[in-house]
Image 1 (tube, rainbow, N blue to C red):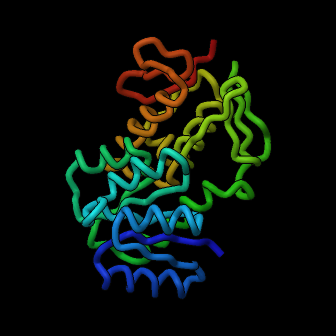
Image 2: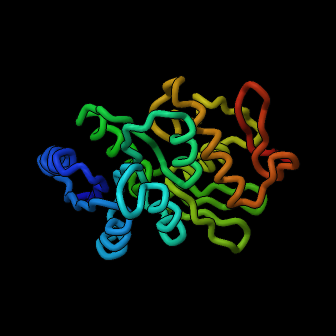
Length: 226
């Protein structure tokens, strides 16, 4: 039974999500703002977090900035703010996916289950992937750069796994989006750019002189084969 933390200051919306997810077998926790959510998340260790952006005391951005210092729990942004800048900032802070309000409960459920399938070690391939000093063990959901453990979000982990699966192959953004989110909608393909940016930062891999991830102009990305 997966544990979901819903962070939103709209009580009616939280009650709706709690009822819907509860009927589907989820354990649902709730918090009304980012500060309260930090306390609940640290104490209860949820499997996934549904996070509003605009809240009192501490907003969703502040929560992610603080939470990502310690935890890589999957985060789905749920927000009425639909501007690209809002989505970009959320993804850069480590969100795995986003859904805009108003939304259909069935779509929320599908997104949550997709993220949870990707982040669950039992659902993944068990063969270890290696390339240069990178090692990725899907079965243990563990990635290393040399002897250093990489603290990756589920989306970053799946992105690296896709690239490691075929070094030198150029993956389009839609290819990678399908691997990372289980969907390949063109309107969402730019989210891959922000996951790549975050992954490069954790690898210490500058885009102007890549050791690992190379941008193929107007196409997508590939793992440097040499």
